[in-house]
Length: 120
Length: 111
Image 1: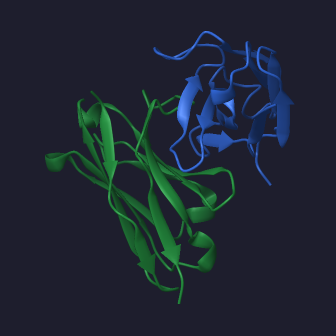
Image 2: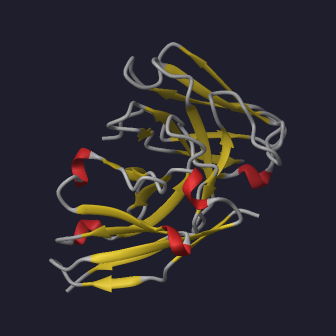
Image 3: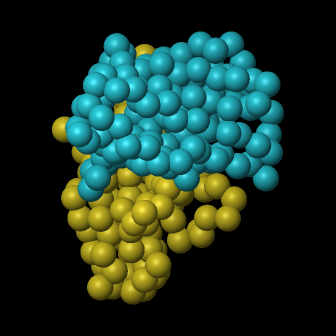
């Protein structure tokens, strides 16, 4: 069965970087795009970007363009999302979500989420 | 401000039907039949309920249905049950650059 397992909660100081991992199993990792979505406390869902695990190609939301880097390691079927220059308002749960194709409006499978807390 | 507009809250009694709207623009909802709906219970990851505007994933109750007309998509839940109480989010594909845009979410209360 398809599973996306994310890394554990992180606490970071303002200005630092965080790297969240998403380990995939139960399917061919390189066959499906991986998206990253975040949710601040009590707020809605926000799309951050996506990666094509086959080519490594990425698309980022304009809001995060200069601070986010999405990568993957196909040898261990894992996608990564790194966010730099963290601010207090980056405190959120970060999710990875698998999309069925390049042109798709949904993620059929989601990770359990990783809480990132930014605080001094 | 979210890209897609949803009502902040809706409510209904057990057994009743409710509909949640999701209004976008000609750049997202209006251009693609790629609207999805998610159910989210507190502390849990979103769960896909509807994709491609009206399709249900395997295992999702047929009490959940979706539709789209122009720039507005809708999620209807019939035969409301207590377990349906949750937050619901719509999402639309919006092109190669923006990709996914979400609604602000709707809190469903089962009275």
